[in-house]
Length: 364
Image (cartoon, rainbow, N blue to C red; front, side, top):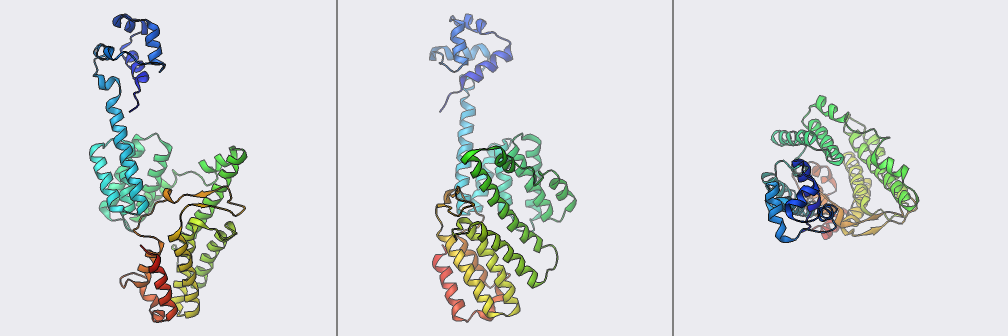
């Protein structure tokens, strides 16, 4: 445990309006010794600690910031365990973890953020009323008490999405207006300012993020009005073309999950038409990328536009159990799944059965 005496000692002196000389005189030492302590160049003899604490009317633990250090250690453990749960998609355990943290540290901004995001990850769409109420309360508290830009951005985004989910467009737009402009973002500015290899990596990260956001916006766009089937297929193909253009050598890494999703939605469009050939063709691609995603570990990207970037499997999170293959086994096999019935007309086809077996082989 790191003892952080220098800031505490200086703060106590300033609060009590005590000079280094006055403290030194009280302790029977030189002012230079006190100066060294406050510069972090040494520590008082252990026998002096009770006298210093008594002089400032604090406990030795308070003087040494032991209580705060213990709090930091506890919160760090919560954050570390949460990362494990989010990596494995264990939403219920993650939520229970942050509920426990919140009962212990209800005023810590990191804990408020953790609980807000945990409830949001576990909520379905549209967000249940009770969940939405808690998310909104926590998000607004975070905006009131936090000065950390990342926490505030998380709060604004979560509040916007939550209000949109419950149909409150007015408040959703109110928080949307608090977001940054697309042309003025942290990632954009870093990519502009940084030089050399660090700058190239920042630019490539921004390019990948932009393509990801385009893929997300295509999905959002298709929810807005009743597009024709041809328009929907064209939109999903557009997203896939961008991803494949960026990862031009086929080493798509983590973006395999997006390609799998887009191919599934195209297959669903063809299935609604009763087009067996194209349905199976698109499902084949969906399974290909689902298996690629399920088998994915650490990757160094190699295509020219992304060759400074790496994917590290341990840094990923998800809000579902299993892997990508599990998602499509459920979509194709679970009778209660909303899209299951669309594929009934090919369910007895041997190729469909083979694809389902392939998904199950790599599901966990």
